[in-house]
Each structure stands twice: as structure tokens, then as C-alpha cells.
Length: 115
Length: 112
Image 1 (spheres, rainbow over the protein chains, first blue to last red):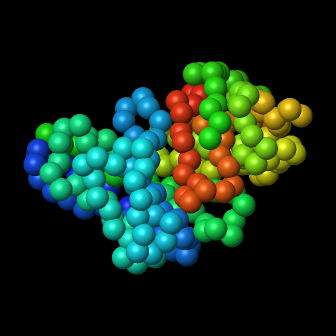
Image 2 (image 1 turned 135 degrees about the vertical axis):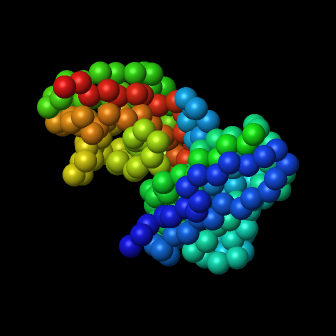
């Protein structure tokens, strides 16, 4: 199993450009998450999904949109990138409602720089 | 979710046990204690979790005090590859998404 994969690994954007980050998981997990991590800080939740076709806002959702059209994929979109969105983006997934705990599996991250 | 408090940094000699403390004095009865770590530039990695009993797996041991207000993660024989930021997280088992709230964690440096 590949686990959680993220595409691309690196990206440089100019202010105002748009892009989509792709997250894929092959563990049949119900829940998926997008986090961002700024230098020297912990992870902050952007958006999450509790199942195919559902999305919800996390702690820092402004400037981002997400979609979960397929269970295995979770897309994070930046419609008009800003320098404040320069960060490392991590995707994660976890089991669904049947689990009593929440072990999240993380991808390797996407390093985004907005100039 | 209960808030956690961890020391910002710790050092440990290679081959010795690393004991990482975490305070969670406001933890409620149905909240689990999770530990994750993040090796530089990589995605966080799950280590262990527990509710009230001590837990052990191939990576570490988790000791939770009887009143559950604090816990200690133990890496029995630390190696240089254990150098990482360690996050203690408290989260309930219910809720719509069970997202994890990462604080600042403890930077563990294993010294040769």
C-alpha cells in the first residue's frame, strides 16, 4: 500500500495564481484532512471530510476550497494565492465512525511558496 | 478538547530512555491521549494512544497517571533517528471528524 500520497511535492506560485493540491489514500479511510504548517509551528486544520461528497471547515479555512468527489481523493484548491499561504501542506486520513480512536496517517507534504 | 502542556525541548543520550512528559489536567473521561512525532520536514507519524491504562507497542510506552491529568511517553532506547518534535494530543472518541489539534510539541534531540 502506498498510504497517503500528495501531488505535487513542491510548487512556486505568483500572487493571484490558482492551483489544486491532490491527496490520495488507498486505505479505504472515511475521513480525510488538510493541514498547513508554518515555520516553527504546529499543524493547523484547514478543511476536512467525513466521507465522499462531504466537506467541512477547520480552524483556518479562509482562502481555500476543497472537494471530495471520490472516497480516495481529497483536493485542496487555492483560487487566488497570497504570500500568506506560503506553507507546507499536509494531507491525512483516518478510519470512520466505527473506530474508537483516531490514528491519522499523513502524507509527505507539499511545500508551497507564493511570491 | 483538553489542552496539553509540554516542555519545548529536551535532550537525551543515544541508547538511553527518553521520557517525554505531558500535562492534560482538564482531560475528560472519554478523551484519549495520542502521541505523534514529526521528523524534520516529514509528515507527522502516529506513535501510540491510550485512555486510562498504560500502553506499549513496538515504538514506545505510554504511562498515564491514575488521575489521567498527565502522561509520559517513553522511548526505551533512543536513537539518533528519534530526533523529532513530539506532540501530545488529547481528543475524544466522539464528534463528527475527530480532528487532531497540534500544539507546539517537544523538540527531542538525541545526542551521540
